[in-house]
Every structure is written in C-alpha cells, then in structure tokens.
Length: 217
Image 1 (tube, one colour):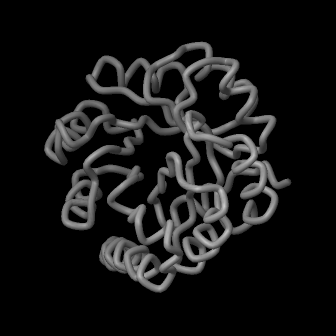
Image 2 (cartoon, rainbow, N blue to C red):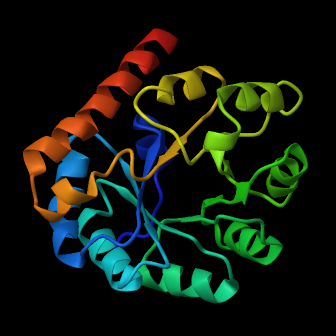
C-alpha cells in the first residue's frame, strides 16, 4: 500500500474526482480508465458503503499512479479509519480544527471545506494544504477571484457545481484545484461499464485543463 501523496501528480491534472456510493465491483475498471485518461486524483467519500475497503484496494493497486484520498471526513474517528485504509489525502465538507491539525501533525495533505472568507482564512491558519470552497455552485468563479485579492497566499479548490463549461473559468479566477463529482462520473454509464464513453468524458476534462496549462507556461 502506497501512502505517499504526490504534489507533482496533483498539479499534473489538478482535478479531484469525488466518488460517492458507486458499486464496489466497478471501482477497478473506473480507476484504470481514470488514470489512463490522464486524471490523477481520486477521492472516496467515507459515507459510501464499503469506503474503507475501496480506499485500501485503490491505494494498493493505483497508489503510484493516482493520489487516493478520503472525503467526507468529519471526525477524528473518520480520519483514523481513512488513514488506516491507506488514504493519501483527506477532504472534509466542514471545518474541524482537530481533524485539520491532526493531518498537519501527521504530514497528510488536508483540504477542508469552507464557505466564507473568515472560514477560508481560519482553515489556512490551522494548516490546511488547500481549502475546498464548498458549495462553489452558490458562489461562482468571481467569488474565488475576489477572495484571492486580499488572501492571495491561500490555495483554493472550488467544489460543487464545477463542470466542463466553467472549470477553466474557475482556474482563470485563481483556483489551484477543482473538485468534481457527478459532472465527471456518469453513474449509469459506469454501472453498465461503458468504459469507452466514460473515458471520453474524462478526456474532455483533461484536454481542456491541459490546454489551459499550456497557455500558462
């Protein structure tokens, strides 16, 4: 099991795909095509059935090709279970000082969820690696840009409502990462293992972000 998070992998394709309640039997095929498409970061929410075993399996098999993380981590108990399963990074939907500081002490990247500028700054002050702005659909790219004007040292990862049409707008606003769930993972196609179509969706996101990255260099 590889428990080492790679920032190089993260920034190679700074999209975090969020998986919640997908059938365990599809996880191998999904992760394979996810990595083959050029995506590099996968989050399994802890409130999914079989989350710990899924994280353990993916960490063991794909832990050198993908950063495998645990999401919806709200308590220290959740954190212990996630790390024991092999999670390489942690994502929370809320601010919890104990969870953030525990991750910092253990050297585990932590992306806590925050909404207001005060919450965002507090998360960063406690040691967050990157702050998940959630739900971003209510705020939009302009919010990211405006928050970063006075708080430009903070790395933000908008999550919720990020899609193929607006993902580059969020990056242009200054986001350093993007969290995506349903927009990235078509549940019916994955359940039917229509991997060619699923890969096509993955590659659309990859091509868009790569084109943006090429302009920035």
